Image 1 (cartoon, rainbow, N blue to C red):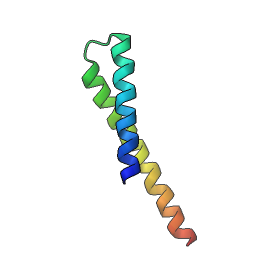
Image 2: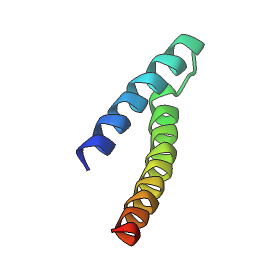
Image 3: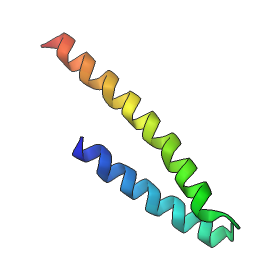
Image 4: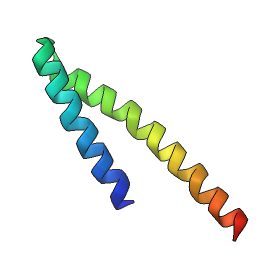
Length: 57
């Protein structure tokens, strides 16, 4: 769980920097939306990886 939170924080900072540099008007909203999408993707991947590990054990 902690690794997922670290990745989410890194993704948030990266998106914030990107949208600020691009001059996006609503950079904070876009950053939150992009981070939310990546959080769902990472959570699903983590779920499947953990379930595969349990099947092998």
